[in-house]
Length: 366
Image (cartoon, rainbow, N blue to C red; front, top):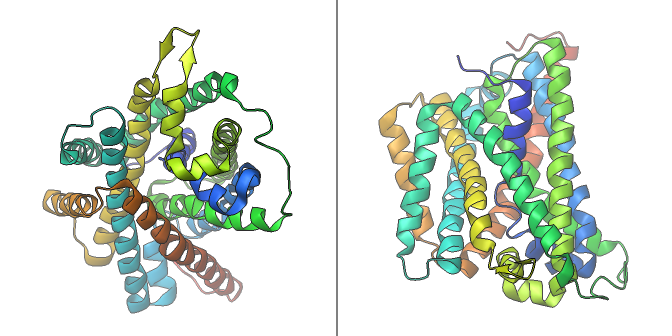
């Protein structure tokens, strides 16, 4: 069976957690946090750490099993399968929507006249190749792409410093701490998506005592790295555009790239960043694709090329339903707030709690 190393756990996890979140996150948190929105990004991501530790605890007690298999063991066959079906539907729908982001990003930025379906099919072919190559290739792909994502984001922030408007960040905490709380809640679905992927990839994690210690350390590093990067992303957009303009622009990160100039000679460098950002979205879609495939195999014993093709067709069909960016952004927000966040925040603690209770009672779970 395929396995990933502890280092790959960090880079793959960070790449999945980051995904394309840097595109909508400023708009999402600014809508509830205003000019203080950047302050709630990191706390929102940190909410994912206890959930990740619960997943790793379950992996330690049930080596080489994903959380869908563990759910069937602890909750019984029918409840476990019901959870599995919900997992498949949520990750499948979300993956199709993220595929829609690929088309929206390129169609709106650099190739306005090309049919949007071309971008959907192109992105899906990349995802399909990664999925067919296996989880180890996916992990190695992330080891290459995630450092490039970090570099692209840091450069975009650095080159945007001359565009900062003085006074856009003031006053700080003018509306108190309540907007920060709600902003953190809006960020929380992002780490929860990562937790749902972690629930499926648990089968491929090393389970040695020393390796589990390294996995827990990697979990902290993953969340803090992505949280800090996205904090910088939101902060620079707030300083350049201000809250009202961020809400008007939607994907203001793309607009920021268009404004960036290097040494007053090179402008419009968003085209350079888009190639790297495509890799980020492909990783997020691939994570959802893998999750659906693991769910189908666990719940229905369905695996193989024809089922992967079926999943790809479903992803494409979902993406084609949302060809307009405003509709896509709205639908992603609904899925984040009303599907991913409630499902993960209830399932993982409940599963962990039952496992701990049975452990104290001396009931074997594997």
